[in-house]
Image (cartoon, rainbow over all chains, first blue to last red; front, side):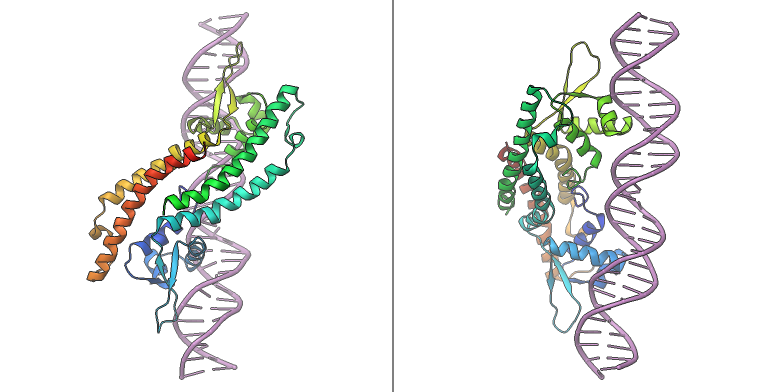
Length: 143
Length: 143
DNA sequence: GGGGGTGTTCATTTATAATTGAACTTAATG
DNA sequence: CATTAAGTTCAATTATAAATGAACACCCCC
């Protein structure tokens, strides 16, 4: 799944290992078990944390950080939308707003052509609005 | 956006060109304008067609195939879900169903551990069900 | 304030995915 | 039926993204 959504396989491996282990794991556990470099694990864990797919667990008397998977689909999806999709949609929407048909045209236009482009430019803006409204609903529906 | 969703940039370029041109374009037009190889354009158009992001237009008296962008967000999203996400979710769901906790365990388990894994395995199955229900709704909401 | 364990950073290497281009198919045309 | 234009295929190349690993910071404890 991580690959279908354009993320590295290693993320899926780390999450999968945590998911398949009924106790929290520490950094080094993951390195050993997956035979993965410390660099990859470090970056993978950071990303998984920022999207809220794992949560740190404190084990008293052990200064290592342990991790547990977040298993609520809603949280996983919400994190993906928030961190990956929304930022893209926002920068893209901002550009769409700034566009004028004249910027947009790739060739000299007939009047009909200008109308078509005006229409499409409007579409672009409504896309952005709809996406902004619907994505939050998706997380809710999955919760 | 195509890149955010894990697709090649060239797809976005082709779609963008069609979107920014208020008349249908032929294969060779795209090759010329984007200075892209025939191979890439051929594959790009094929993909865009299978996800329903462009539609062929017949121009009488011209044996070339022309293409127009599909500008309905709903159709674009539906195509992406249908061709990219759903197949993944299905194979993934099928594997989840076939899994038994014993396949799943990466180590010898306490009783508590077995419970945790049973739980997670259940989660996996509900994920699949929810995804199957919600994704079609998403297309509708965007329509 | 040195030493060992824990984790991060980032330049280099490696693996993966995308693009090219030449050879090929298909179909229309004279 | 030879010719030419339109589009496809796929092995080789190139570009991009991910993984590695060595050097570096950060405690904490004695």
